[in-house]
Image 1 (cartoon, rainbow, N blue to C red):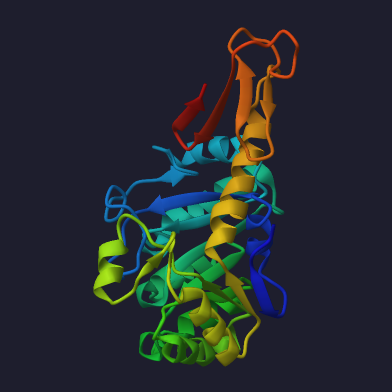
Image 2 (cartoon, helix red, strand yellow):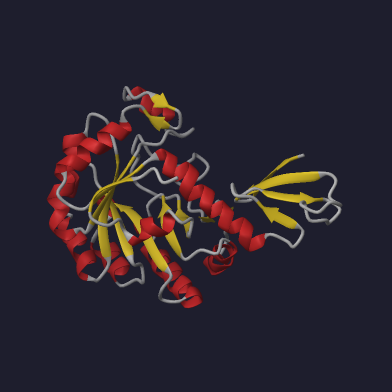
Length: 300
């Protein structure tokens, strides 16, 4: 089931592939000079210069394509931290992925507008990244930074704004987006996630958790969408948890399953320890496992 809401225009190419589970997530660094209260990055990663691909720790960027191939991905999302803090690494990773998987392999990246400067923008503009998603939550943050957004768009990249839906800040966020509207081609508004890292800070702001998301965030997303002029798309928490992650795990299981393993619709894998196919009459004690990153969970 598809839970997202598209109010105007087509969704970005990166989003199309995410919804198919066809994007590998490359956490390229945990470094970021900012400390946004809603940042969901774990304490084990934030502020540390580490690399993960689909939650698998990677020591060398040359090893990234191997993990991507295991997930049968058609593209990659480069995130962090803030990838613009290590622009040379972003460029190198994009080069490696395009060389390994071809020009059609789609790459998008995220960055906060406050972290853009001339040098970083120049390196990213010259890279083989296809799509850049700008985080901005106020018009004040965008002042003086418009030239960098314009330069990225002029380099031939699809440039958009991707923001969290913060209840109480709808008009402020919409003003920032509309300020950059001449230079962007899409807007993504994300329902605000609750994580182990950010839930205390979100509570201090007066927000209340509702499952894995913030109460009222989806309504805030709709308000922002009504106020902006660019093509706009709302990504819900259910989409991230059930569609994006679920389909990515399914693709990984399909690509790595052994002949005696059966991939179920939810991405879990059934197998018989004696080597029989789990659907064979000879199968006796069937186990079910789910692999996420470097962890494998089993159910007898």
